[in-house]
Length: 171
Image 1 (cartoon, rainbow, N blue to C red):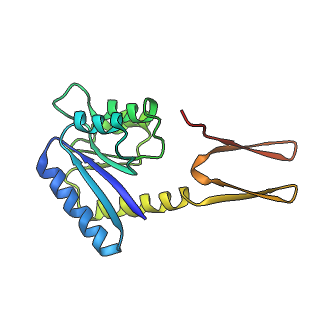
Image 2 (image 1 turned 45 degrees about the vertical axis):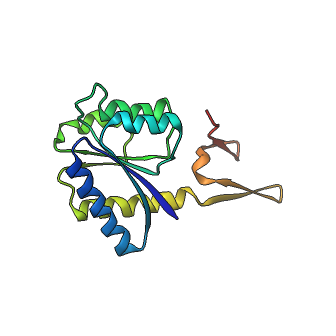
């Protein structure tokens, strides 16, 4: 399975360091990563508008010299592009943003500099979640088997000993 990763930070050295750490993790655990680096939110935004790549993970800085910051763009990913499955990992040199991120529902928040151990734990956790999301959910109704992708299930509802699965619809 290929994990598609975007790194977006306006400081090139941070992007390179994170890319190198991810490459080490990829080699150590025999993962397969496709990594794209963006030095501005404008670049990353264009990729979303073109619908070029559907990323699995985005390592996203919060502060940019542009008008749009990482938190605003994270909200855009969730609410405008309807990309709930993307795991957003915010990266910042400042801890003060922790509370501002709840609305975006990020997977993690890492304080710079990003060490191998921080990135390793985050990537391993993401791969566990992605593997589970891509697995099928099987159920039986009146003796007939049905299968639905687990990531499409929003929640289950129980009423009078009957269970209803509420699924995502495409935007």
